[in-house]
Image (cartoon, rainbow over all chains, first blue to last red):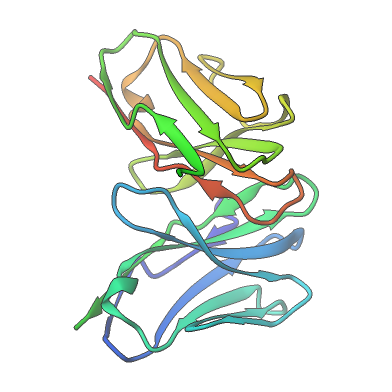
Length: 112
Length: 113
C-alpha cells in the first residue's frame, strides 16, 4: 500500500516555462515532506523540503506547496531549464520513526 | 570530497554467492540507512542505524545483515544471493534519526545471474 504517490510517471515542458510536479500522501503522521532530484547513475540529491506546519517554502526557482487538507504537495520549478531534466522523488518523513517514505518518481524532461 | 560513498559501484555475481557492499560518510552524521530501489524504481528503506545501533529494520529477508563498525560506516552483507536481489542499493546518512534531510550515496548496482 503506497503511502506516497506520484501519479505522473513523466512530464515534458519547454525551457523557460513552469514545471509542476505533484505528490499525494495518505499518512497523517508525516511531519516533513521533501523533494529529491536524481540523475541517471547517481544517488538522489536533496532539493527542497517543507514542514507539515507550513504551506509554502521557496528556494530560488523551486517552490514547494503543501495542502494538508487534500494531503497533496507540489513542486514548482520556474523558469525550467534543460539541466532540470531528471527524476524527481517526493518523500515524506514519519514523525514517530524518522523513516522516509518515497513516491515512485516523476521523470521531468525540459526541452530547449 | 564525497560526502557519502559506496563501494563497489557495480556488482555482478552468481546466485547463491555471498557479497558485501560498503558505505562510508564523512559528514559526522549519527544516523545511516540502506535503501533498495527495485526494478519498478521504488526506493524503500531496509535498515537504519543510529550511533551503531539498529533502529529501523523493515521486513527484509534475514539473508541481509547490516553491520556498523563505527558511526561513519554501515556495511550490507547479503548471503545466498537470489535473482530477486538484483536492484540498486543506496546508502544514506542524516544528522540524527530526527533530522528531516538524508544525504544519499551514488548507489551500488547489483546484478545476480
